[in-house]
Image (cartoon, rainbow, N blue to C red; front, side):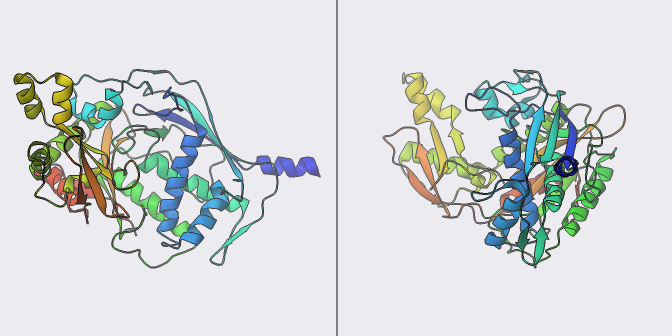
Length: 415
């Protein structure tokens, strides 16, 4: 009887063949690239929370209970084990800044630190399987989450990770994208296949919409829409938008280079924030109370090359000149805030291989305390407190900017 019970439990196993699409900066404390189940589990938690937030609403106790039933909590182990198997090749993932400045711009921080990555085109295998002991069911708002049901939620979170997100550093700027190369073994029938069959951007938008809506309908709780700006990243049409750019590219780096060139040009076109920070460095004061560009993510680093060159021309040592020409914007509490905009490369089906670009915006509250600090690197200049962005108008302007440059954006219709 015990052997039979164990055999039945072993049937709760999902095996997903994966391939890296873009460089994947996932690693331990030493930044050595490696397959790390804890990192992937954290990403799965994020997408499950986003999914449940769009159906349970912002009822935090219920959200914690549902999330804990699937991936564990401080009082309950997770019934699901995440494993990664394989020996992917690692190494420098640098591109030519002269040939592909946009892609290098998107990967700027990892390139600056010269971090090795798991290289594109590498294969591995992910497994989700249940632990071989019994778990009590969890009741959440009148619905029961059994171990079997937890596999549905884990697979749904993995679908979202593979179709909308990624893993590791620079994941919101095109890094760490994974794809399922063939239909997983043991994949629940209640969750759409993670394997894309879309051969065009329009087909991709339709496929993503069908998958998102099927997953959202499979969750039993259907509450009213969240606030206009949610308190965390939530998959709900009221606070989340997904677009597919109506262009295709023969390689992932050309797709990311196109997006990165436009993104860099867009950021440079908004000179007001930079002028205000430059005024702080040169005059010790600022005339604006809000830095709009911060909505694209924190910390936000400013370096004024013209100021640096002017100082060095006067004989100021390079290190001192760089400090006097630099400032960083950080939150009042904590080290940073991830960008609410996710720019992603999506491989299309068919031959020859083509790639599309997707863009996702979470309209979530930017910072809980609504203040940021502008910190000059030159300690003789005092930091200044400024207000955080109060809306996502700048990112809406980004979408308009892409359209004005001649590329239509197909919305992924979420019901």
